Amino acid sequence: MHSLDSCSSHSDTLVLTPNHPETDDRAGPSMKRPRFDEAFEAKQFVSEILKEKAGGLAVLAEYNEHGKLTDSTRRQLVNIVVAYITEKEGRVPSKETKTRCALGIVTLCPSLKDPYSRTGYEHFYDPKSNQGYISWRLKTVSRRSKSQSTRNARSSAASDDEGNGGPTANRANWNYLEKQLDGDQCKEAISFMSHCADKDQIFEKMKLTFKHRQQLIHDAEKSSTALSVFPRFLDTKGLVLQDFDIKFGTETASRLLEQWDTFKPKIIAEAKTLNSNLYLNSLLAAGTGQNLECEWQGWDSDMSCLLLLAFLLPPSAGGRNNSTKISIKEAMDHVVQFHKACCSLTEYVEKTEGLQPHLLAVGSAKNAIHEFYIVLDGKLLPCQAKPSLSAFDELFKAYFVFSVSYPHSLNAMFTFVQTTIYKIGCGTVRETPRVKDLRAKLLN
View (cartoon, rainbow, N blue to C red):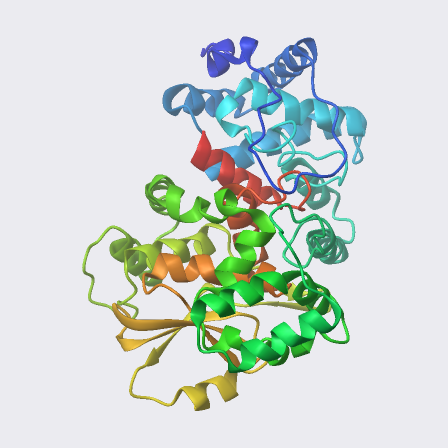
């Protein structure tokens, strides 16, 4: 028989309130953090469940051997715990019991803990939202209005993202602003930029009109005019990056490019555990620098690795009144599309008008890109840099600069990038359990 305590040899001294990363956006209510005695008691509670229920020792044996659990074993762990508490308390266990189970799981098996969340166990059960793996399993077991519950959870997640730190949140506390123009001075600066050929002057005037631009973008009746009022976004590279820097500061703005070499091999390693298919294999091969002859060959290593996130955080259904779930390959069009350099850009843009922001990669082949553009409101915004990672960095920032919601099908993927890599809105943005689970796997 395996030792239950060996499953968390360091858990007796585990601190369950990890230091949160420095963020520019960490408002929101604080959550009560577990005391040591609560964590220890919860660990013992889950240990006893696994001792008693069939399959529990196999879960422990896998964790003891590998220091982590596969997705299927993690699901088995949740199933065992839920089966036990429903036997004891019926189909609707108390909030305290579900919290106790979630705390016990991450204390018993520390690598399952989310280091960025306030308690570390919200992806198993979040008492504030009643979401998490335990809640999901309870809904399946009870078979109560499953479809409606799923739609409500998705619409609630989208609503929270919009209001609590996502790209459309109206941030008025810009710490990096210097002098700002208003009134006639602002109008004069906007007019001056329309005819100015000096790039440095354009950047300076754009900086001085930042506050006015943000007010315009967050005005529901005027937001669609932003690119008409500030047309230099369409021919001056780097303006999107400057606005994001003003909004969040250079430390936050540089995180993807600075930390990518750390995240990239972990994303590839995690993607290798997924069920194999031709498209996934082609991205994995490109991500690791291999050549693979297949229909989807082409994207460079960095872009291929970024697209692997869509496999790890697959598309959800289309929204409140649409249960259609698009394929991962279709979801990729919300990130990047390829355009042959010899074909008309005008015709392409006319066909894609109305789509949310995405990258347009122009070149002779996917691995020979000459230029990246951000497609927004039927217009092309040239990216400053040619590397695909830099282009994706600029695409992500465009969502915040122009206050556009993420594509619903890839909300989890973009939210993961936002909170885990850029560390924006940690603790305030609504994250699905899958986002928290992937973060725990990559960071532990």
